[in-house]
Length: 273
Image (cartoon, rainbow, N blue to C red; front, top):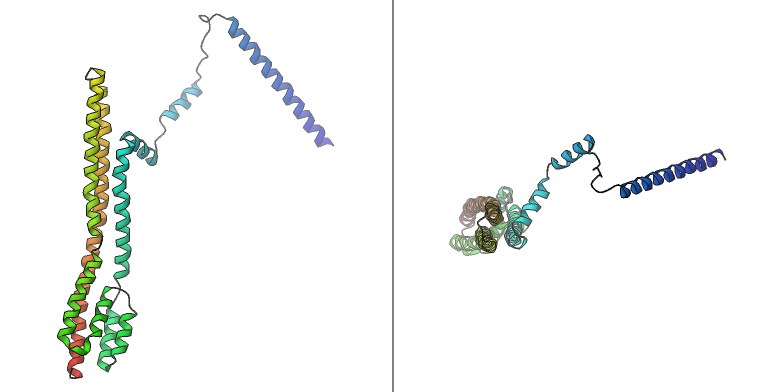
């Protein structure tokens, strides 16, 4: 009961205070209307408001917000054209990185096991071991084991031929990445040229070569070029990384092929094939 009474008392005081505030505001509004416009004085700006305004103005802009502003300033249409090669190029790059990471398997144990199996004359065991190992090297070895009864020369030709096929699979889609690397700066330059034409159109309509008009138009025009160059640099880094991975796997393929042919020759000599 006491709590209920206290709540009602607080609500009564709040209602009385609110009514007094509203009456005071009405009185001030009536006085302001009655006072002539020339005699009305602007409300003073407190120091606290000045500090709050300065804080708002000097608040640092986040990276995403700044990037969004530059994207809009560079014309959303042309900046979208520059962003398309970036998205597609990154998609192809990630696909290649995942594929090459799976292809770059450790095959030393597989080659050792195949050599031991061939020394025992267990060709089917060697085939099973190559078939159960992932990667292009295991595929090349398996193709050679399928022709091991035809002699070492046939196995060597099979390894070389199928090695070329696997090398092509490793380098697949790299041409698309190089295309996007070339397209991004070209689209940026195209946006710059069109932006410059639009800037000259603004100067012609204004009838005066104003530094503000010229600087603003050139700023908007050059943003697309900056975006295109940044996209090309990002994709170039991914492209070089992928090329390095491909070269590493190709070197492993050559070394593994030589080791496998040695096992095949030893198998043929031992079993008089």
